[in-house]
Amino acid sequence: MGTVVIIGESRAGELIGGLPKIAVRDFACVDCEDAVVILGKNAHCEVKNALSVIADGDEPAELPRGVQLITCGVSPKNTVSVTSRTPERLTLSLNRSIRTAKGVVEPLELPAPVLQGFSEYDIMANFAVQLLENSS
Image 1: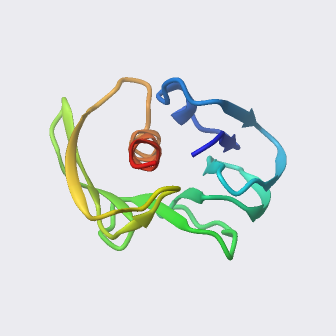
Image 2: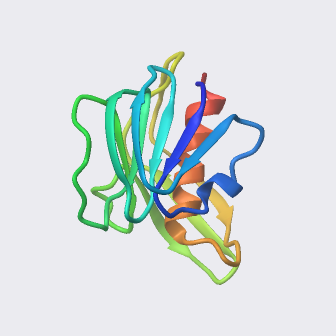
């Protein structure tokens, strides 16, 4: 996995460790087979090629075609969802297999802390990036 490109309004990039990141508020065109794109609010983009696009499955948006899409949201129809929550912890679920640069990650659940100032979407997007990174 290469660079993480964050397009639009999202704080997910602040949660992502030592990976190279590019943040763009306006429009971006991505054509990089090992990039992971996170679509934040008000994202406008053209994705010609990428390893994966992470999007909020609970917000209507025009989503790119032809690349692996990882949707994050409260519905179990999303690729990543929250299966339980307490004030301090979320249990995040990968609901279906995703392809990484070196293989496949099968469905799983893992706990994650609730972080003040970050949306559940930001936490789920970071979870998806970590799964893509740690499996490559």
